[in-house]
Length: 476
Image (cartoon, rainbow, N blue to C red):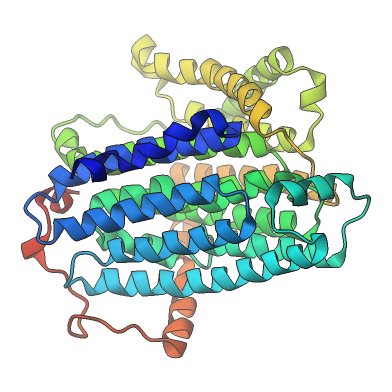
């Protein structure tokens, strides 16, 4: 038992030998995995076959860490497959939950398709460069004037595999539906495992920045997922359901940042999202208890002038902080400009919802965010830039960097319209589709189940066994 508990921390012994990016990811997985493991021992106390759960949990962590530590693309791909297979055992750990088995089956199909794409990508890279060593391939890419169509295809297959394993639309249904798994398994999945695709993009950033198709795929899939998943998120009433759609949207943001070439921001986003989701899932059972009896103030009226003023104020403060802390050279990076515009839009959304009648006590946090968030962003940008420098994609059109802020501006306008007129025509037309997740998972589910239907260990009716559901999960 003691060996099982300390196993997630053993890779930290190799800390002096690791590259900076590997150190960040190893520490992240080890810390999140160790905390989640300790939580699961209390959460599943008294559950039958806990030893089997511990074995598969440690196996999943070991495989995820091997993805980070591997220098060979073949080993990295096999470790990613092993992570998926061992996680499948955790998702179906509690027997008698047909919904969990169906969701795990959908994930299994997508993961095998991603395995094929990864294998084809590694094969093409090996044929092109004569090696599967990651450092040797990146060195050859740096010295090459022009990359071949074979390398372009390999990058596109790699991007497609990451999109499927990162639960991007329309491949997102399994991530939303695996909420039937025990809460610590959900925490491990959302805080550590689903981020592995983003790590693969970060570690191969010098190659991706020289390609055309792969960044376009990442930008398109990430943008669509971030926009639609953020909209669906607003309609979710359950804690874990909202967290699942949040993960889907945040992974879209991270892939979008990789598509723009802002890899340092993607790394910052990855680390922050992992830590937040680990805390959010492990504390989900106490959210309802904390909310009971809490007074709710009426929402302020959100008019057009309020949104316009908030947007102007956020842009002014963010621009001033960026100019002072980053300098003109960093600001010239088109990806930084696009991501900075997204930051301005996010801050404007916070400022627009301030109840100015609440006095200084109500204004402290929003104004702290207004000044502190751009400063923190600039500081972390400088720190992460030393680990993963920003790299502009080779042939991504300038329009790609313009479309992103415009798309998020449209999302902000839609949010303003819905909040200002919750019973209006736009809200009434949008709500049924948003509640249904824009119906994107239905076609995929029907197609895959027609080709490979799941074999359930319970009757045909989708049910869950409340007798073996821990109390903390029922409260969530």
